[in-house]
Length: 394
Image (cartoon, rainbow, N blue to C red; front, side, top):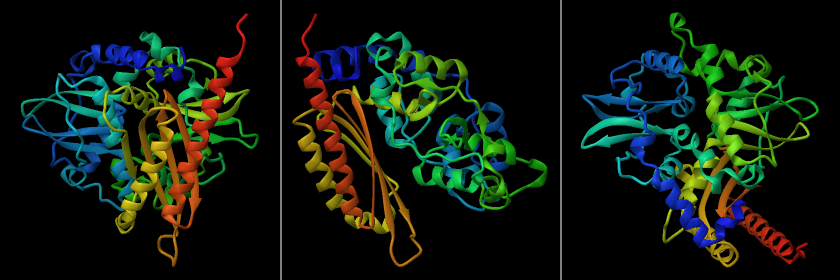
């Protein structure tokens, strides 16, 4: 079975039932690390490092208050390590024991959270993570047989071993990701660099560094990527199945796999991609649409962006049923007289994931170009499907 078979509403309903037959209680961790709102960042980082966490819940008197994440720390420059956890908390959705897992996956998408708190009444009783959901994907036939190329992201930014750490961190901040691939001169996969490697290297409690230094705003940015990255990372072939990818992620506790063909990078598959596929199975009346990275001064354009996105999604719906659409906006030269926009988009439709990127000086025009690229990809996928169906059987 391939991902495009999920366009079949009966198949989609079966898959949704299989996913939601799993319960939050069966998948959550009821023993988890947490911090208090008065804990200092130096201690929060210590716990996150020792527990290998990218996020950690803030709890007081058994009540969940928020989540501290590497993502938030990375965006805040020159934070003192005496900064209290309560000033760094992000609001994330809370989950109950009876929340369907397809809905849990959607909440993870909407908040870009790696883990969510499970609450009963006003008390947190567990944590459910992307890793918890991904680890049993290989047990569901309709999911595990999907090919990696069908849901991977093929629009990938990367760095080289001799690039400066600042270059890698700039990409992470701009794309709101925490891991990117490192390629050598032949564009073969050399390694992986992420926020975890940066924190592990720079964390020095006795030095009382600022987080600006920890996250690459000051001296450490002069380091070469090759001196920090994880070399010879796990990879996956683009024709391999999702079950294999999920197993590698689960057994090695990793969130990102470079996708290769003859050692050359052709894409990236992450836990987020798997979560996105699960969220696409949720029964809903409208398409799940999310726009991230938009600066306050550009929110004036939201009506025009909504209109452009809506128009193209309505055209796409005539070919494949769209389930989710996520668009991330990056802005360059924001301190100058004009700004350039780089927009990436991810669309799940007909059980397939389509990703594209567009760059222009005008925000609305960039969005229009992005949506037309996605429309073209959907049209090409339809033609490929139709050609496949026309092939004579032997």
